[in-house]
Length: 201
Image 1: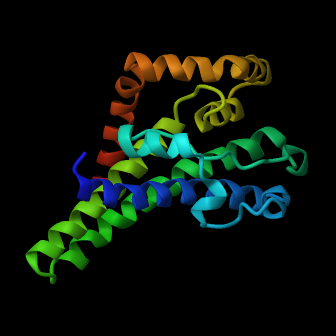
Image 2: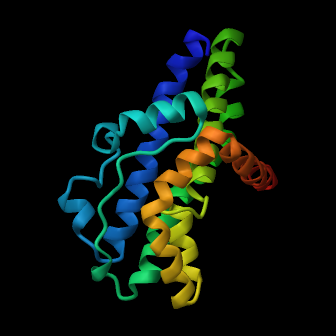
C-alpha cells in the first residue's frame, strides 16, 4: 500500500469501526439497555472501540473488527428481536456512512484544485470501500458476527438456539474463512450488491 493511501486509510478505518460500534450501543440504549452508556461506549472516540488487530486487518485486508460493545438483552422486551435490531444497527451505520461519502464526494471535490480534488476523492473512495467491506463482513451469519444475531432473530426458536450453539466454534471458522481466502469470495457478492444498491439510490 502506498504511504499516502495508508495515511488516508487509517483515519477511514478508525471512523468506520467507531460508527459501527457506536450504532450498536445507541440501538441498545434506545431499546432500554443502559450497559453501553455505563461502560462509556456511546461515543465516536475511536480509542473507546479500538481492537488493534481488528483495525489493522481492516486497514490492510478490508475486513476487520472492533472491541465489542457489551449488551444485556434482559433489558429488552423481546431479547431475540432486540439483539437482532442491535446487530443490524452496526452494518446499517456503515452502509449509511458509505452512502454519505458517495453523495457528497463529487459536490465537495469539484470546485477544488486538481491535486486536492484527487486526494479528497481518494479519501472518499477509501471510506466507501472500507465501510461496505466492514458491513459485508459483519453480515456473514457466523457467530459472533452481527449476521448470526440477525439470523437468530429471524429463525424459529429451535433453529436459532442451534445457531447460537455454534458460537464457541465461530472464531475458528472465521480464521479458516480468512486464511483460506473463502471470506473474500463470500464478501464480494455482498459488497457488489451493496454497491449496486447505493448506486441505485
